[in-house]
Length: 113
Ligand code: FES
Image (tube, rainbow, N blue to C red; front, top):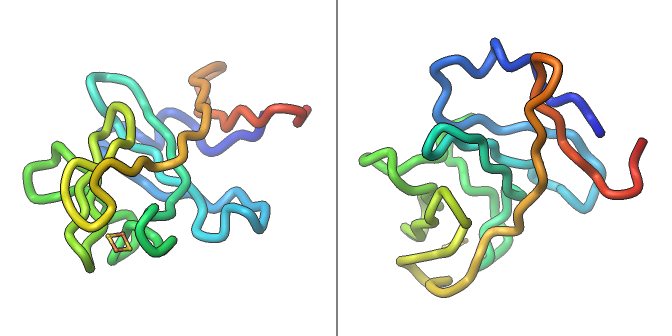
């Protein structure tokens, strides 16, 4: 597992980008809070493969209820990454597994130590 950050850094944070590598995660990942838990996805829209954020750590729509790909207006449910509007409706963000433990938020990578 790889430490993303101390949980204290995420107090009051709705969504934040991380760049833990490797190259197959070219735009990093987004960590977003929904229903009191953190969800993680590759920061890559299924439409054209572009990052979701239009400014650093700006991932949410104006309601705060959806992740938004700003340029083309795609909206994704926070809980499951499913696209509910936009050119990739029915598509889905690729989830990554997060673990909150030992006062930190960790990226759980199968096969990693
Ligand atoms: S790149 Fe995602 S909606 Fe176009």
